[in-house]
Amino acid sequence: MARTRRVAVVKPYGLDTALSVSELVPPVAEYPQLTDQNVADYEAALDELVAGKWAHAFELLHRVPPDDQVKDFLTVFIAQRNRTPPPGWDG
Image (cartoon, rainbow, N blue to C red; front, side, top):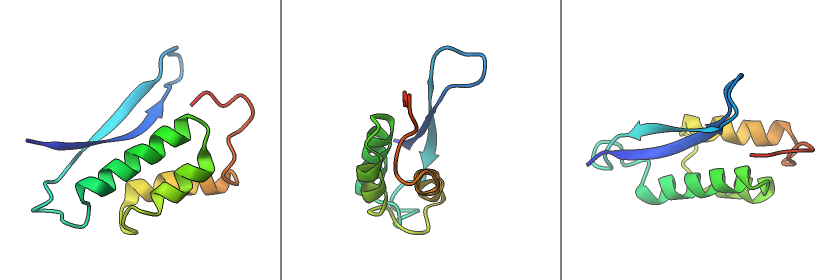
């Protein structure tokens, strides 16, 4: 069985509907640095980000291993905006 992780929610230019972007994650046996709990923490952080709870999302992301590049992307996105969603944030 394959492991997947939701990475982001994006709304491509010209579309009215947001899309969920996911990635295949190697099995724990092949990539023990990223446990199922780490995947769950990342996805919980993504849910909080979409809901506009950026400070909590930032905290959850720090439960994910530091060498996870997907986590880095989302952490930097939040940090560059001072952990505060912009006015009119819709996820």
